[in-house]
Length: 365
Image (cartoon, rainbow, N blue to C red; front, side):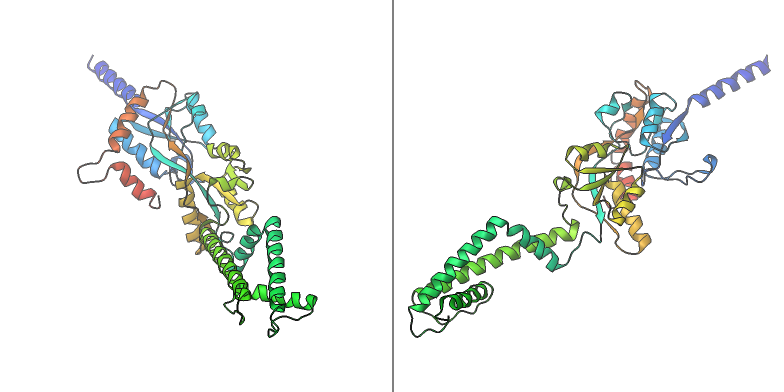
């Protein structure tokens, strides 16, 4: 009888132990989930923001964790949908379409999309930028209007000069004189030199010189603004500038659908690494993905190359949330939501656990 009781206790303990182990699906996504994919499952030691967060949640819930490994977000979500795992955590964006098939926890991290570009292509020479800005400023209609204004001005200036018998600024012959007047007009636009004149001729000289000062000031302002923007991102200054450009995005992720809607020529890639290679080779102009991951990867690549190879532009768009995934109506969701809220609360003068994780894994965010 005593042996029977002992056996019964062992069976109960075993059953309790099994019920307290949760299968949690993960996939690689720097710096959220990282591990050596070449190592055997037994030898893998996953690390990252999501891993630390889940370990803390599991500890607070009093459960053990069995990691289950996947290669894509879609496979991860499908495994949850089929109840092959109890939950999944990585860098999974909360979307309305995904919520139809599975349940999300409260937000585990708030972020936005960002744009990665080549450092080489994000900078240009001053002359190159000036040429581009002048080309944009001098459209066909603007050029025709300027030439007409110049033609009228040099003819008026030549005519006024002919009335002054003592002046030898322009040739008395019309065609030769107009050529002289043309060079007078160009010189007056860009220099402070003014010929000795009086009366109406002096008024024309002054007015034309003021036109030159205004034109140079406008051009200087435009080029300065272009140089500033070029220094941090080339021709891409907001998500609106992605329209019409060739932009890489992971085919199975939410960012791809968003940038398709804003008119970008999307080049689907299987991985972030494949998108980076397209940037380096110049086959795409940008790569769009979740901001924290792009910042982390760019930092790692630049350190490895010992020079600035990739730049993540500072603006963010399309705000998103990452969540932990559960099968529909999972009893674990409510427990995890409470744990997530608790981990965001500061402990006296100490930062919250969530803030500590952010400082540890996402220093540039």
